[in-house]
Image 1 (cartoon, rainbow, N blue to C red):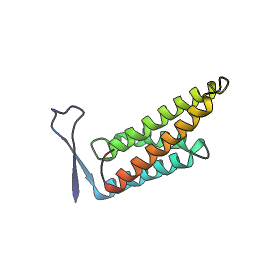
Image 2: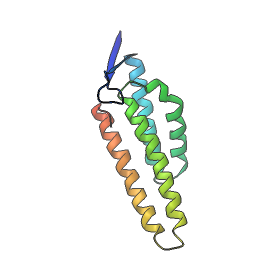
Image 3: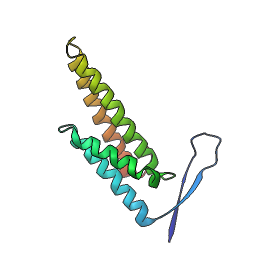
Amino acid sequence: MSDIILQEGPGSDQAPEEVSKTAQELQALKNVTLVVYGLQALSFFFGGPALVGLIINYVKRDDARGTVYESHFNWQIRSFWWGLLWFVVGCVLVIVGVGLIILFAAWVWMIYRVVKGWLKLIEGKPV
């Protein structure tokens, strides 16, 4: 049996795309999304897992296209790249003295992004 997930296209005037996925495929995508959020959460203490999560996102991105999980994949990818940018900026500005504030703010922002995404995923909603 096939489940159909309707997701609006990028523009507000576009009709929703129809993507047919089986229940097993949707559950697998949900599991992958949960794993990536877990890896991002682990990266608060160890940096490496976030990179593994990013690779998973890029590898599975096409599978998620047109489903509710597409927004989560995009959210996770953007969270990684923006988090990395602010980490680098914070490290560079440590010499000036404001770097620790930027690093702390980026850390809190990443926690917010992971928690918000995780909660939306549990609710079955896009981010």
